[in-house]
Length: 168
Image 1 (cartoon, rainbow, N blue to C red):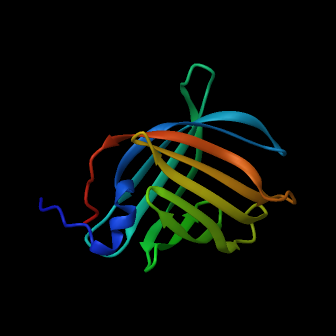
Image 2 (spheres, rainbow, N blue to C red; image 1 turned 120 degrees about the horizontal axis):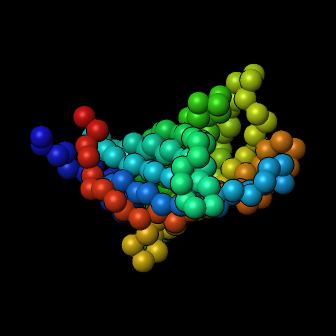
């Protein structure tokens, strides 16, 4: 299989490409704190966007998978002058559009648009921070939901476990 070349516009976020796995912690005023496992895959097909899929699962005290948690999928588009657009969709009826900036191996995003179906939980805003630290992908997510203001929700540290597999 021929591997397409990464579109040159994506060079600032090329460090994301690949499969990442790891664990994190979460909490919010309306739920108990928890540990979770995560897999993120950033791919591309040679066009000027990255594909993105994230899967998470609840971990018990021994680090074993208990049950699935959240899933999201979407696209990351690099814009001129280090600007970035991210479109994410969740099976729980939420769609988010983030805008942000890339500086070296650090990405800061904030929601520009949040849309919800009639059955989705109340969610109004999010902020995400991603960074490559000592070869690992570190990230944190703050959210405003269920009547609470923007505050810390989840964070994780992921290790690269797979090379790029093209999205054909």
